[in-house]
Length: 116
Image (tube, rainbow, N blue to C red; front, side, top):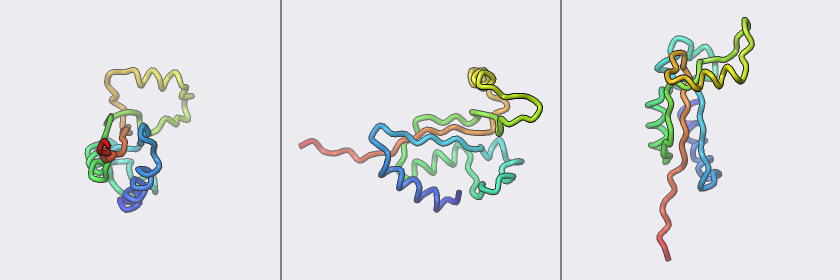
């Protein structure tokens, strides 16, 4: 997604999200997946966990959580079946050495309304 498309999407989501609504982004982290990042034709802009969080903040979002190494780049494996229990086990590990995807959770910053 281009930065212009992401800017437009963030503006639309800000209007649509409820006050308790959150934006959840799971995507490759360029810092850890730079060799494979452009193997997917939809990756036209480069984002690391730092640049994405900065981009969100610059467009009116508060980052609630940022996990730079959340999941491996892919969980598809032709040699073994990747089950939900295997994913839960991976997520319970204190260090995610195979993690190349980031998880970012943010919410729009709403202007405070003065009390009447």
